[in-house]
Figure: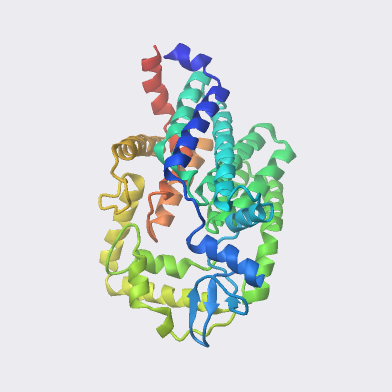
Length: 412
């Protein structure tokens, strides 16, 4: 086995990975845009406005496809980067290639680059043979293969996150300003694809540039560059909504994940059935999404206040579901052996690794903090199966020492 992995090159791995993704595309691909992405792209073309709610009265709005003359309300619910990605592809659209196929094609390319970047991170901490084994696990993890064939931002998020880690490590090791600049650019893009990433970015720079190296100059340089990346979208939101914000979905997500139905994956039907927008009397102006989200936030807080003990217990159930396994998942094929076995095995090993490494000052301690921060933050809301995919490369790195021992015995 050792000889096999020592002769296996990253290019062999990428070729086989490409084949697996093509197979996934053939069987599982989304063949059209759907849900919010379809509405955002269509409504932008019709009205020139990034939005998916259509005002059909002074207090009534619906998320639907706009027609000429409709009043499209500007949106602040969705982070904009994946929308920009799709919209640029639409502008460059090839007539013989549908937009959904173009999106998936570029996601496949980015996923292959992600595998390559991941291998480059690993090689800094282990041997080529071990690196190739763990990169293979990353490349052929079932959910990672499936994700690229779906119209979802997760593939781009993983690509950006791995570059974020790679250039962070490069800067820490080599102290070249170009690596800091690129790290900061990827930080800004990650914030634009997931608004809450701003918290993890702060954890990162506070850990390395304040706690670890006490380099205040570098801290302010990366903050400035990252702010410049996100500032055009902040400016757009300030002009439209009179508030400085990246996204406004806290209230909806809190209510979806904290309601009497107590479903780990969240319950959108509870929100829709109990609070139909037609009865909320929220004025359909530019502030519509802001006010709607504030309403959802207040309802969620009321739920929690009524029985804080119940929701605290439910919070820890969500933590366990994120760390290991959701025992009541309704997602199709969630309990498929090829998904559940590798997920559970990796979850246990990475948890042990994170607990062990959190005491050791340096990159692995930081990754442990990053890992647990993700779990504790998202468990406030709800946990979807795809959320664990963004932690996959982190889990594999945290599992490195344990996997070294296991693989060392197997290879010898």
